[in-house]
Length: 600
Image 1 (tube, rainbow, N blue to C red):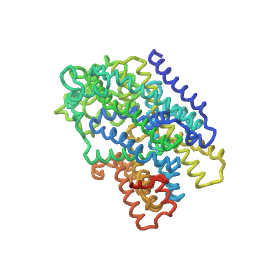
Image 2 (image 1 turned 90 degrees about the horizontal axis):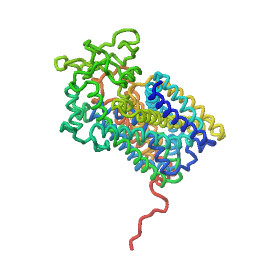
Image 3 (image 1 turned 120 degrees about the vertical axis):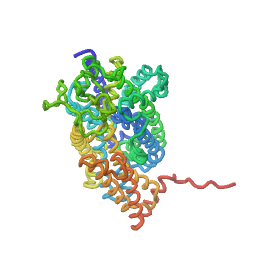
Image 4 (image 1 turned 135 degrees about the horizontal axis):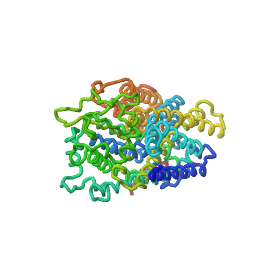
């Protein structure tokens, strides 16, 4: 074990000890503490916890990696996720807090005066949360596979064990204060190397200003990356590959999905008052902005460092024997792979897929079955007449943020800090999602629908049992994910947009929306989106078959529009809600006693 391994174990181990210690200290003793932390969390602390809950492995690990590889198209993730949080904070959170129901199924069941609507909402919650948590568990596995020297599958199991302790034991009370600590860890872990990278590449301390800096060559960093990319056969970094329509639909799905995420919404019930819900939303937005405004710079600097390090100053590639230690460390994890197609012993990175699927290495540039790693013949990007060599390098997108400090040769403690931050980001969101699943089962299903007579103690037992089952299911999806972390999470946002967003918006702002309309809308919205995702992600659907060229990640917007249309049509031909429900809707938006000012 070398000094870097010792640092990694120290930083990650210390963070685990902190999280578990907080969970034991803040152990939930009642359902109120388990579900909403007793409703007494201060706004600033809740803002930090919300930021940690929301900034998952997708934000910390995968977002900058996605942008590094797809360039301008990655702006959809930045605009969608940040814009959606603004929408949630301004349009939904205060009203939901005033309504007083601390889960989305609880709101849907009471607002639409129907246990059937509640059950549909529970099913939607479970589907969304399991899709989302799959990305988090994969993120944990990636971190552990590299920094703890275990396989990704074993890393997922370790993550399951850690989450089990403080999610099942502490509930929302334990999770909240754990997430405050996790926010502090993850934001330091992201911004410290971002500052180092910006200064190293551009001479600017802040990555936000470094992105627009001019290099010694006289070109801006973005123009330099554009040039390097085109020379290697990639499209320009600042040019888009998605259609404008798909970009719009993906951004909208991420935005509206953010506003409908059950595990984020529940955070606004952990504060004492409606005023505190608004305040904590503002704090959370500020805490989130620190990371999100740094992401474009980190993505660009990572792309620049990867190309120049791997291909060398002359662009002909660097001899594999002289590649730095970081390359071989990540190669051992199977997340970077090299196959020497032309036999020159040099690593050459260009457009095209280097391998048939994701490679598994045994240290000899061979697949685990002993066959030589080969070029993917079905890939159409490589053109031998335009390229001096075929692509010989596989790079998993999810490693870019984690590998950046090593590629840039930053101090060992920075590398260890990034590892601890990545684990914090993934585990904080995973815990929040698992709590939402357990709450949906114990409170919304068992207590509200199956057996209203169960005691507080029995309800807490069901919540913990549901969390245990959810952890095992989440672990399975973490080991067998349907894509990169950010892609998997984007699918969850699309499901949330197509199911919950219309039901919540209409529940707050439409007195005429009834249970029949809401239920029909949710079923059509999530059903169509889920079918589209399953077909294209698991049943071999091709790009030529996409509806209007819209990707599965962006189809949530189509599902949302179908939800709205179905809800309005069905509500128009069915009886209106009872008068008392209409009065509740009126009171949510307009406080009692607020009349029109009299003229004098």
